[in-house]
Length: 154
Image (cartoon, rainbow, N blue to C red; front, side, top):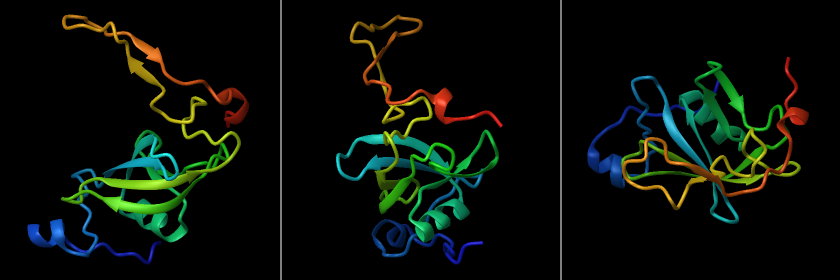
């Protein structure tokens, strides 16, 4: 259990301009978190945190998320070795989003479980137009590793 305790949210002025971290967790107990490469600014991934995973992240300096699909804590890199070492933790003006700046470690230092540096490795095709029922995606990055060799089925 964490030693961090997040206070109840107070006034708008204190939340927006004060110095106390008062994260706004949703009705499901989660807050969105964006992980960004501390050196390049590249957005690596998006995940959710609950109060305990945010506290663990602050304590350990290793990005720790709440996995909605597995319903458990998830320390980034616990299986792949591609750990996110947290350099800075920021929040937005109304404290309902967390941004962590990380050093993405490991070989080859990929954040995405599909083998890419960033989870944002596809973009909407430049040819997409209004009325398209399913705009096409184009790959915008090269795969750094084969997930089948990194993630072993248990």
